Image (cartoon, helix red, strand yellow):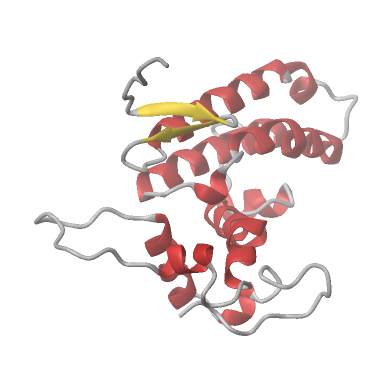
Length: 199
């Protein structure tokens, strides 16, 4: 057999996986691909023959889906969220045709576009996708649930600890009412609501 080469990042199922567990490279790649998808549909955004509702459907299907592919697994920072939010809002403003010097708040923009704030979109995606829902519904001694809750032994390096996917999820659970997440972690086969969260 041949020797395997060590690498700090590789692409797997369309997502970039890095040795430090960060999502910076993957987010940059997603932004680039989504920007290209948006530009390819420039004629649709500019035409007056297609309704705004239809344009937004195109955006959700062809651009937003590209941007947020694999987002449920990202380890996010505030900078990452701001970059994604900025791109999302710029796209919506172009579709709705709101240009300088006209001004509109992001809240009003999302209302006009019948869209969501990117931050909530990412939270909903994390909880709505099967990833965490399936894990939280498993029995307590299941290996995947153990891995989610496991804290390795030893001491970490001095300084501020890096944000992790689990820390992000735990923070969201503390900041929001449980009722917000019940529909997202419901058993999709029986449609029963799960009221017990991972401790």
